[in-house]
Image 1 (cartoon, rainbow, N blue to C red):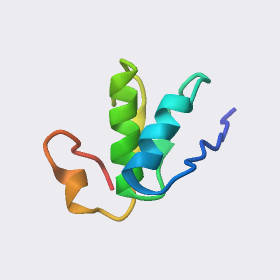
Image 2 (image 1 turned 180 degrees about the vertical axis):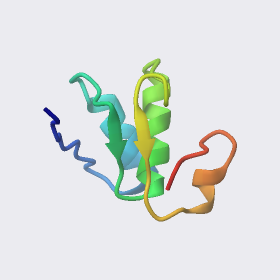
Image 3 (image 1 turned 90 degrees about the vertical axis):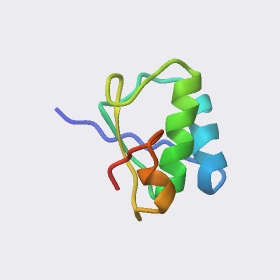
Length: 78
């Protein structure tokens, strides 16, 4: 059975993704889809600070393909 869980970012952009990652205390789902690439980059960095790495610990997809998402440190699918 597949489960869908919503992780809310209380701010937009990179800061919102970062805060959502740091506030998320439940077990990470297999995959996370962010509403835009800035949220995804922030979420990825927040998870890195917590010692979690994509794609080893979770899979992450952004949306809207901003230039930052293609930088070497992110290399996100958007």
